[in-house]
Length: 240
Image (cartoon, rainbow, N blue to C red; front, side):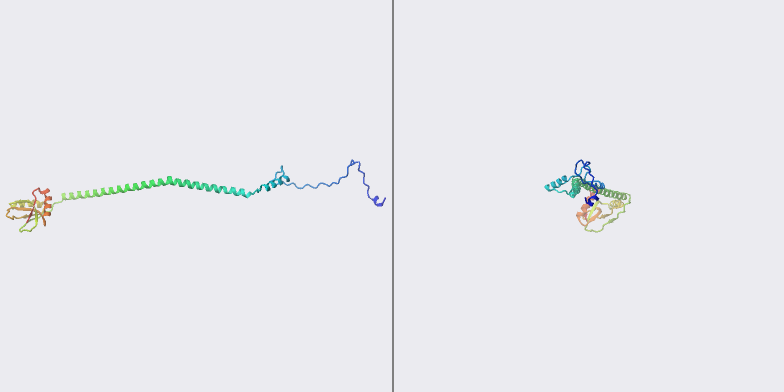
């Protein structure tokens, strides 16, 4: 036996301990890594196997569908805009109908009533103005009559004609006695009536008493007709 063989320790015969099984090489277990919680997407109790993942991927490829989270957000963000537009259209339509069938007829009725009221007010104002003017005229006439009744009449003049004038005279009385005719003239003078005594002419011996004279017969006749109310029917026209 070599020296080398002697120096090497002899292997213990453990054949009895191994029960005739071959020797196994083993290594010590590695230290356990720190435990980290599973990602939120995965469930701690239901791990996703490689087979399931590959199956999903395979289904995605075969169906041609790819999940896009932004697409769902865009759909959700567009819904309020559409709803808002619908609400605005409904409000505008309702407002137009209310204006057309409620507000507009009401305004037209109010305007018509206002115009009718203005017309009534104008008519009442005109009527009140006419009544006021009529009362003023009536009051003025009443005062004038009172003044005439209270005022002393002016003294009329008495004139005796001596020559013909070629005018038309309104005669209210005639008499042979000029003194009697003068007395009548004085009474008229006290009432403010001016008279003229016409001497006898044309073969007549009567004196005539005139209360007015004119250039034409028509004017004299009109005055004579008006004088009949105060002097009786015996009023006529004479040219002298």
